[in-house]
Amino acid sequence: MPSTLLPPLGRKPLSETDLQFRDDVLKGLNSPTRAIPSKYFYDRQGSLLFDQICELQEYYPTRTETAIMKHSARMIAACIGTNSRLVEYGSGSSLKTRILLDQVIELDSYLPIDISREHLHTTASNLATEYPNHVIQPIVGDFTKPINLPKTSSAQTKTCIYFPGSTIGNFTHDEASDLLHAMRTTAGERGSLLIGFDLHKDKDVLEAAYNDRKGVTARFNLNLLSRINRELDAQIEVANFEHKAIFNEQVGRIEMRLRSLCNQSIRVEDQFFHINEGDEILTEYSHKYTVEGFTTMADEAGWSCRAAWYDPQRYFAVMYLEA
Image (cartoon, helix red, strand yellow):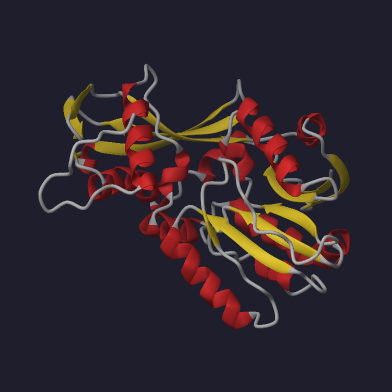
C-alpha cells in the first residue's frame, strides 16, 4: 500500500504514476534478484538518449526495421486498409510511424500511447503540424496495463495496434503472451496487429548493439539511477555503477544490468540497501525470436499471421496479424 505520510517540507506530493514508480523500485531492490522494470528508462532524458541509440552504427534494430518499413510501406498500408485507426504502443518519437502515415489512406485517427508525458505531447504536436489532415490523439499511459481507448468515430472503424521496435522482446515469454492476449482484447474482433521483433543472430552482433563504443547505451542505462535520484527521495552514487550487457544464449536474450563497482549503501525513501562490489541490478531483457516461435505464441493469443516482411540478412521481422 502506498504511504499516507505527508511528503517532506518543500517536496511535492507524489502523483499516482510517481507512487507506482516508487513502489516498483522498492519492490525490485528488495527482491532476491534485484531488478527495475525497463519501462522506467523513459523519462525525458531517457527518451532523448534512446533516440540517440537508434542512430548508432552498432544498433541495427531501428535502422533495419525502418528499412523494412520503407521498402514494404505500400503493402503494409494495404493490409491495414481504409477506415482504420492506428494505435501505437510505446510511441516514443514516432519516427517509423511517419512512414505509415504517408501511406495509409483514409486513416480514421492516430493514437500514440507513451509513458513519458512531455516527450509524447511534443511528438504529438509535431505530428499534428506535419499531418494536418490526420486526427492525432495522444494518450499518456502504460500499455502493460489495461487501456481504455476512446470510442471510434464509426462502428465500422477498425483498430490496428502498432508495436514496433522489438519492444515485445523486453518481456518474458509469459509476459509477452499476456500482452498479446491483452492486445487482442483491445483491438476487438475485427482488429489487427502490426509488430516488429528482433530475430536470433550472431552473439557478437547482438552484444555490440547494446555495448556501443560511444557509451550512449551506458548513459541510457545509468540514467535510470539518475531518474530515481531526481524523482524519488533517493541517494544513489551513480558513478559507483557501470553498464553491462550480455547475450544469454540459454534463454535467447540480451540482459542489461547495472553492476556495482564497490561495496556501497544506497537509499530510496527511508529504505537502505547494501550492495556488494560485483552485485547487479537487472534493468532490461531483450528476447530474440525465431519466426516460427513468435508465430506460435501469437496464434495462442488469438492472432493469425497474414503477412511478414524481412531485411535481406534476416536480422529483423515485421509481421501483420489479424484477430
